[in-house]
Length: 176
Length: 169
Image (cartoon, rainbow over all chains, first blue to last red; front, side, top):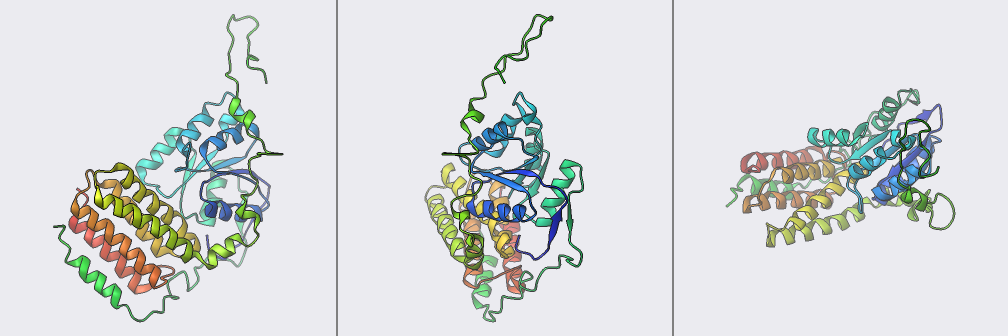
């Protein structure tokens, strides 16, 4: 999420972020709040189930691997809620978006999955797609090109001897 | 909403909804409320601090990963140790790229996918896991931002090569 692209939203969303990493929580909170959205954060699936039952959210961003109750179990629980809360759109935010895992997330009742680290544009496009509305747009003149630093140009250490030594070692590895 | 508010007047059945005890315990206001912001996030500069010093956070994650790997090396059949290695790598994968360390995210992702494919961990698998840990340490020591440049890509290609050679099965 360390990029300079700018976005705006044409309506305010109530968003629940279920994420146990304080760093990822902070990143999502800062970014989504900067667009004007109202963001509530919880640290595990059990709290997410409780929050969805206690307040209406437009969408839930659900981490998968969380303590106490994981995101899949929390989603199943929300979908079994005997109120409209059961219909709350849920996007999985996972560092594991393999085909098998995504199928598992969708089977549990999630609406979509976004890979971590979360890309701003991809997240907003995913939210729009799940809600079926064009809420977000990238501001003109921000083409999203990565900076030189992101492309690795900041790595200016010319002495790559340790890299070479490492590559030699793994090239001769035979598993014995 | 009552627990029995869907009672049909004529059809002779009623829908009994269990009490929603969980949501009633979750408060959005007042003491013990679900946080609008985490305690660290109340510090306006939290993200900037992390961004400016991400490698310090990463070093802590690397310590956890290394300790878990050491435990797994002692007892490869230990499922908890295997899970700990996976989790540490999984966390690194999810965070590093957010702070511009895409290469570290790629290495961590490669390690996660490798661990997932292993049935029973053997010596060769431990070697491969160890190579990934070592590669992350090199990326950290050399502050390899972005894709790590040519050296970073060589690291990643080397790991792909060793996985292709030794395999997960």
